[in-house]
Image 1 (cartoon, chains in turn yellow, orange):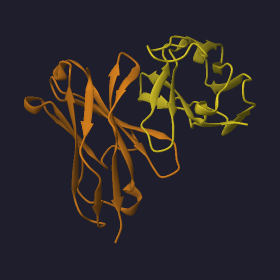
Image 2 (cartoon, rainbow over the protein chains, first blue to last red):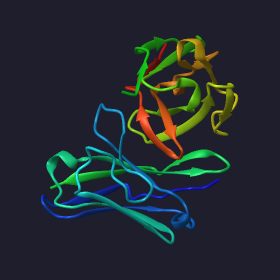
Image 3 (cartoon, rainbow over the protein chains, first blue to last red):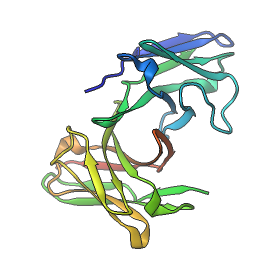
Image 4 (cartoon, rainbow over the protein chains, first blue to last red):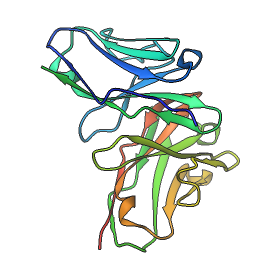
Length: 107
Length: 117
C-alpha cells in the first residue's frame, strides 16, 4: 500500500518561513492535499491539488510537489498557524492515504 | 452551504453495539461519496472507508474491513458508521467527510466515542 512520510515536528520563529514535507514514492505524479488541524477542531483543507488555496486561506500558505516530495510552505508564520498538518493523496487500491502528521510550533 | 452534521458523543461499554450518524445538507446527497476517518487520542488521521449513497457502493480500508459497517439512508440524507461489538481500542474521534474528486473538502464536526468498562 502507498505510504506518506512526514516529520513529527517542525519549529519556526515568528514571522519566518516554515516548510513541512511529505514524502512518497513518485508523489509528484499524484495530487497532494494538505489539512490543518487545531486542538479540539476538525481538520480544515488549506491546500488542494498540490498548490491551490481554498477560499479563505491566506496567501501565506502555498504548496509544491515534485519527484518524491511534496512541501507545504507557510510564510510569515503567525502564532495562529500552530497546529497539526496532514498531507493526503488518493490511491487506487486504498482510496485515501494520510501522512502521519506534523506538529508545527511557532517560537 | 454544504454541511455535514454528526450525532453526539457516546459512552459505551465493551461488547455493546453502536451506530453513529452524519447528515448531509446543502448539496445532492446521492451524488457524492461520504467517507469516515478515525482519530485515536493524540494520534493521526486514519481512513476507514467510503460509501456512495446513490447506489450504496461501499469500500473499506483493509485495516477496518470486518470491524465496522458503513451504510447510508438516502431518503434522509444520512450516512452511518456502526459497530456490533465495541472494544476499548475503538475509543476515538470519528469524522465523516465528503470527498470532491480526490480532496476531502467538507468535514463533519466529529463524534467522540468512548468505550470503557
